[in-house]
Image 1 (cartoon, rainbow, N blue to C red):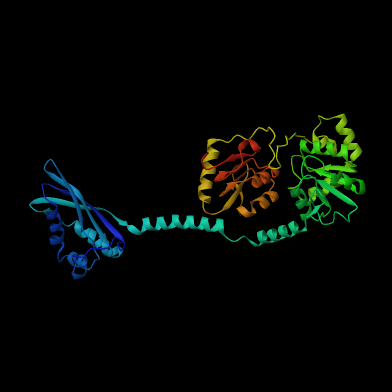
Image 2 (image 1 turned 120 degrees about the horizontal axis):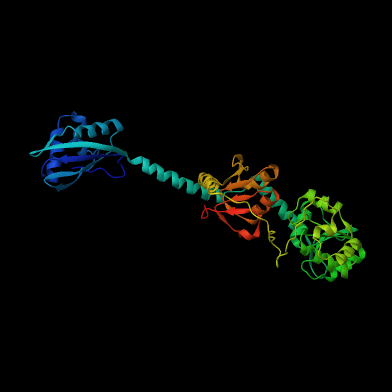
Length: 415
């Protein structure tokens, strides 16, 4: 007798059997073949269908209790929907099995392909996510990478201290002194080729010599650590001008507009030195910039290494359980898409963008409240969120500790 391959099976007929008496499994199978014989015509004869492999092995499971037999019948089928339904309906004409009255009722016909289709969809999602993570960068990323390599090639090493500097540092009458190599790179990116980095906390002799020959502007990060560098430079070198990045930002991350604005608002080295000596406890931005009276100042503690700044002690937005449910649902829908959804304070979607364009999109949206995205919360994303006044970031996992930022960070595990 033929046996249908489980791989070839498309449908499975599930039927319940109720017998008023005690019978054995062979009695049930015999009744199925015997009482349906000739009922459906030669094309749907169960014995022939089983021989040809279009109907699989009929499974009968029974148990006897208090003189009655109950059980199930399972018939795998590779017939089409209509033919399988006919075979299932034919079972219900059986009214006696052996000497006993019996009732057979088809519970359902299972489509085996549905479970296979679900498995295919889940696997496809995983493969798509893997492909998007390893895919080739878009044209903008390629252009940025090429431009970055050119800028790195343009950086020179100046003097015996081998300080990172722009290619025009020697011929320029005016120079800009910054803290590190990344600052020089950012200025070079925006067309300033006359920057040099002190590359540490102590002032190199090369910098002292340059300050004797050039018109010098000191351009440091917008934190209290910047004041320390200004103070040390004014003690050992001839500094002409001083300026700082916006409050809480680093020179390496600010935009071209912010660079020009900072350089236009520079003050003289003597004025900076005087203000530092008179009021050492004032916030760093007060000492080098003239702001409107309503401007709110914050103090930032400089970390022991150049990297992500410790966030000020700002009270974070409270997140309700209902909001968490909305975020969890959105995050589940985004899995495998490598996309991001930007929300307002009513949790309405302001826009949907790929993760690669998320930081650019945040700059153009003024009222962003939260961002849900299929990716890891990284320092660059947190910085962009802080700049855009985003209150909540929801991602798959986080590489940033909660106490490093004023933005609320939520991951899958916390939802």
